[in-house]
Length: 210
Length: 258
Image (cartoon, rainbow over all chains, first blue to last red; front, side, top):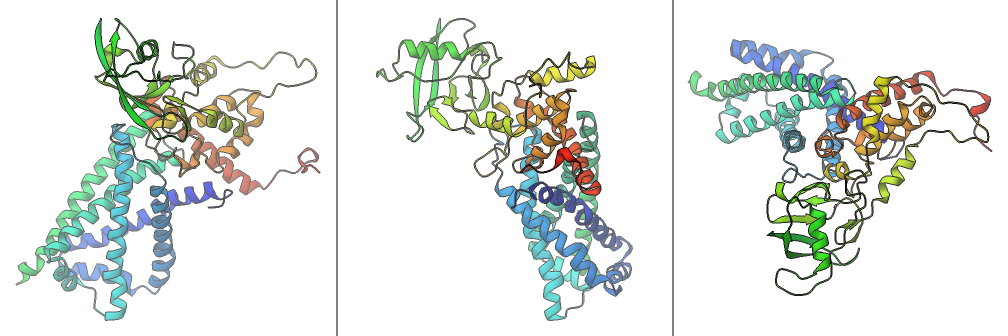
């Protein structure tokens, strides 16, 4: 990385984590939450994005490129860090490590997730709806992978908010940082519970319909 | 007088292979780690009873204000002079700081930190050919804030504990960031404010910080490094936006030399 753009590249990495990647994660989860209103509502919600004429542009420009940048630069940032969690067993040091650990898990999960549910579909032409997803998630292995990948992504997002606010110099004092940490913990717990409930509902749906 | 076992990571020179050697050393009441090393120097015989070379280490003030005797004691970077034997778990394990070039045994070369301080212009520009009058007044609140940072002794503990200070990264480390705040908070030092912010917005600068926050935990002088780094994150960001939105300032004094 050029010396002149080092700061910019690193800050862009921090920025893209929230805008648009984090925001997109929230939108994605909002759409998925329609599962709690039943299969018809779910199909209507996931069809919303597909019907928009802007979707291909949003998918590439607002989601694809930023996520690729955040992921690839993030792998580099993780690679150049030297963990010392067993030497310095501080809470924040562990969170620092977990942030990078969940980054790698999320990286693998998200690219696999995008490949099987978005890219592969272009070639196979499978319709993306409740029935397909429910059948897909009824496989226990895939269900477990989804739970792990989802929790990793949400952890990375929540701890990322905390880290973002420091990297941009918004939360400076320890009180402010601790307050944000409490809020982020609550968000993580809430998203975790709702997400697992949603995934479980989807994975059991095939059995329920029969 | 009781005996204590010391396990020391030794290395005969910068390019030699490291090895572990154990020593059994008598301890006087209220002894510190330095006094144990002095004991080895007096009687360089290892645990197996074999004569060996005395262990080399660096120290100076013996009251935790110079930072020279920093080493990794039981896994954590700290000063050997302030590490009281009674408070340490046994056997006591001593290792040299791993983030600096090794000289011999427990002695390292901390020159890197001095080079970094030069990069960020960690001084107040008062050089002149004539008397420049008394310096500007500093508010007591600013004095208090600056005093805390001025206690930094470039001991290197924050560098040692930082996950981003390592051979793969150029990160200058938390100590430099604290010095930017120290000199930017001084009315005369503030003349170089923008240059210092630009220096830490460059390669190896503040953006390399990964918010592990170990630095503040290990700092023997309890300098609020986390808040300082967060504040400089804000200042470098504002400086960056301003520089881009306003454009480069123009004036006869700012013309490029030559």
